Image 1 (tube, rainbow, N blue to C red):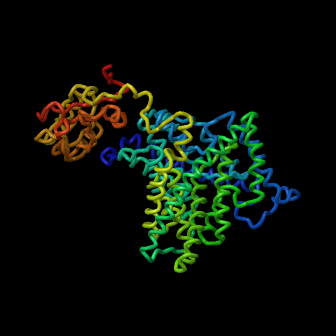
Image 2: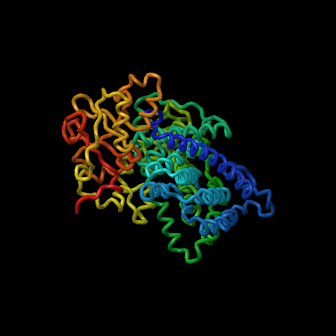
Image 3: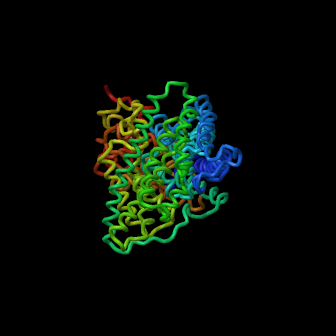
Length: 579
């Protein structure tokens, strides 16, 4: 049944649900951990939401100056923790997960989840100006990788389970199940194949149910209704996309420039770097306490129009600097939330300026702030689908969907023109890893075609053949899937032993034909480059490979309906391309 629904094997269904539940619980625990750490270091649930510079009731004699020491004390704890147990936990986390999926077969050390949770909670709680989405993506992904490894999952399934963990973490953290799915597909897997989509969706749903049960079911931001009444305003939103896209690129470049400066200046042991650098971060927090932690109060106040134009620009610049400094000194946290805060301040400032020029737009800065959030995120990550969906789900504001999509599109285009990388891929490129290039282990596939690598043609079954007769052919094939063709020899799908066994359990099994049980299947063309076909073949290894057609529809090797379909096998197991 699972295969017929396009979810994959029952094994993958159960694992994706388990990963979703686990990621949901981890997201809830992580949020509570951050609240506890913030309460410990600042004496409040969120210091950025306080008025003025209140003292910490734990150390009242320090007055507001405690914020200078808070990041240093936090760094003194998480610095050695990360250095000793999991260096992967340093930084914003998402690039490490992308690398694990693309180059390590989805394998992530289990201890990364624990160390990342502790280090990020300490970083954010002690004043680090970073987000919680990067950590929860890494935590959920490590959970998915670990469960998949223990269950003996294939490499293709392991990558899917890593994406399931990422989707579940985002879904439960932000109460955004759809955005969680597309974040995982667009940024982690970089693939929208149906075989992955259903499993990732199941995981996201499971995590959302857990999150809503424990945290409540309400939009991330409670906002008034915004409307766009004049179609001419769309031009202003396009212009905002242009500005926000540039700011997104600027954020990415400043982030790594500050990290380079920190690398150049620091000469001591790495475990001590967050503590010493924390003093500099603390000095910034003393001047602008709004930069303390994730910064959602700043985001909400920007959308609600509580800040003046000049102060909005100051907050945007300060958030870029504070986040860059937090990452540069070795802090652990994400850049997703900071990009939303930056977008809200830039968008609100743009809206204030538009209201001054066009009086009819006065008081609509909040609409521009919401659109700016998605546009800056799109400019920094070039994840256009995720950017549009995440703002819609975080706010529940459907009335702005058209200007939001327009601004996101423009911002993504500007980012592509202005920069060859994104805020996530740049970290990997600096290490010499180009995710757009083929994996090193597949260099030998270059220049070869599917026809050179495919195995001997298996028996193809006519769609009118009875299900009971098909069992004999599948048994002779050694349990591998067999292609199904129509009377003209055209490929209509494949049939697997699992699906056949389920069908034979039905009361009307004697009337079932192969055509009724056949599943839709991708097919490879004989002339398709082997290098580009590798991913599809590896993903299909659980069913014994993919059928190969001659490009005209019939299976390669002829048109006789009983013997006409060739099969391709997983290249890493059975294919030896000629030299």
